[in-house]
Length: 171
Image (cartoon, rainbow, N blue to C red; front, top):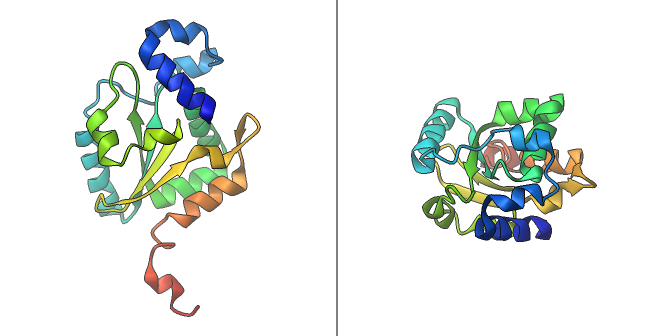
């Protein structure tokens, strides 16, 4: 995780030369999850509107196409049927770009500088766009990927049911 923070800073300061010096794999570089030219505030407003209509929370995955851990997290959650199903049933997902082309300064400022945790970093919003939580992805890592139980626990801890007071009436 600390390595990702340092890589992000070096990447932004040194330009594209860093790409050939990092351990990012070729498939990771070809993956385009993050759109540097997108207006993040408008996109998030659209995602929140959809989340509101579907009664789901928003999962913002902040990072960039340059980030091997960001690409790996997306691969990890979409390739596991249990995690993929949980994400699709409980969240509307948005990939918030952070790159030399567009650091989305205003958006990252709005969410209290989540990049301080490195990348990827996850931001949870409720269905109305209210900020709920920032998750440091380092706590979810295991080896060169992620820990299934930790990821499932994180997602289940921030879905609408977990935050519904009615879920705790009989406790």
